[in-house]
Length: 215
Image 1: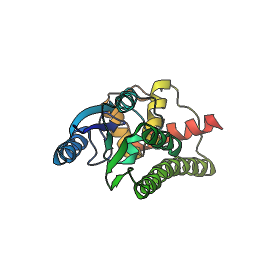
Image 2 (image 1 turned 180 degrees about the horizontal axis):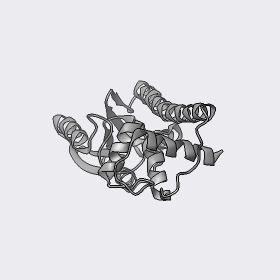
Image 3 (image 1 turned 60 degrees about the horizontal axis):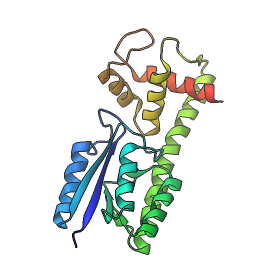
Image 4 (image 1 turned 90 degrees about the horizontal axis):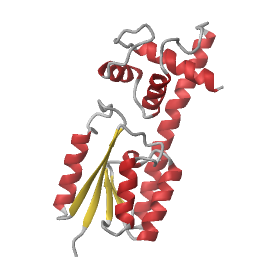
């Protein structure tokens, strides 16, 4: 019987922020791993999608393949490529047990075919969620400090809802203020003044404003 793996690749942005985790790097590592095991494989890609939800076209397709029994393994570079929510991870893990397939993570190497592997994968999923939440907490703390410093917070006029949503998503996926600014510049997203050059300070102002609006 031929063994087949779904090789799942994901990045949140066009210019990937996670060094060494570009689509090309993920593909190379995953293909090498599958080839070394002499497995057939299907490449499934989610480009520009957040890991905070499973509502992604690539992920849906991957899970359909596995549910139909057309593959026996879901392979990804790290658990945060699959999800950053422990509840979603448990959902996928439950599906894998019921449907008879497993997950394989390369960094670090973990497989969910054993109790020990499932335990280790759960720890990785919890860590990914913690990192995401910690980033949000640091942003809130920074906003509070800026209030104390007398900085006026509010949504900058001239910045579209789409731009604010994009900045918030990039930050939630662990990107630094500088990298977000670089990403916006690469996409030619206009600033509040209509210019194309973004700065970390401008990104921070918008993030602070978004948190203010949520409260």
